Image 1 (spheres, rainbow, N blue to C red):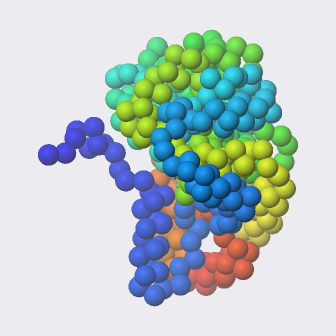
Image 2: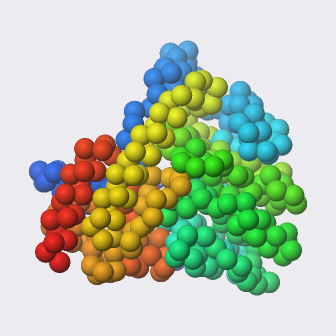
Image 3: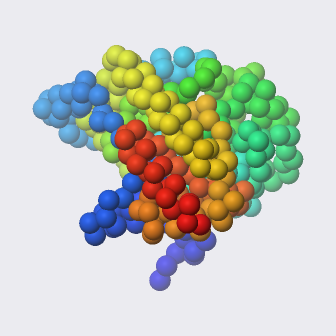
Length: 378
Ligand code: PMP
Ligand code: GLU
């Protein structure tokens, strides 16, 4: 009875581990969750108030499928920061960045096309590519800095997926790495899907959008969202800009699936973009303190990991204790510490675990204590 297209697709590892941790919690266990990647902060109150006001004013109906004009205007202004010259009409507002990624991939990939993914990569790109009937081509990055070197493409390659700052490694691609990718895209007439949802969770330097590079404007789909920057994961609000024909195709998919992003949520999005940004700086400062705590702690326990420049993830090599999946299982079963096995992000993560440090410093310290006790017995 089941669709063949889903045969090859596994459930999302990030949601699976989070559900498992919740199950242990319901059973009365005190689980420390370094699993799913979502800020633990509450959404800033000016954003919540804007959505409440929209509800009270009766903004409770369908909006234009591509999003309300005021939000698209705000996003166009935001993209100027990234050096992207786009008009409100070049933007689609989606229920989460994930939906934008799903639509972009389905808008352009055909059966037999190939899309390049840097290994390790976030869990949902590969299934989206396969659902579109296309083939993911995994290109391993250097274990040293988690950045790609020169790589080959074929006649079938149509797209390269770039995610900087990167989930799961926290790596931030510098200008030379992005130049390398842009040169390959231009030389081989390829599209780039640039997922920039962690743009603001950055501890060094300035974010660079590959769509602003010479020759890239007409071949780049830039995706961003509100989940990570403004602690709005449950609101489901994201957006993208793409060349007009691709945007039209994405819009068709949206019209025939989710219709539009939730009406009053979009008003929260305007407040997020146009309101005070100090809340973002405060959250990022706290993430930075947590990064230092977790990386210093893990390193002193013998895990191999460096301080990433972005995101709230550490991708630690645990090979001296066993395979990543085995260590993750032991941590959950024996210490009630939930992490995501690195293999969920591609085969180069088989010796790794991903730690999401979007929890308080007190819980991180307790998690480190539990990991230490467990590792002493391995
Ligand atoms: N891209 C990456 C790399 C992510 O980690 C996430 C996290 N969920 C998303 C996209 C999707 O974000 P959203 O909540 O906006 O759908
Ligand atoms: N992006 C987050 C993560 O990687 C949330 C879950 C998901 O969308 O996969 O954990």
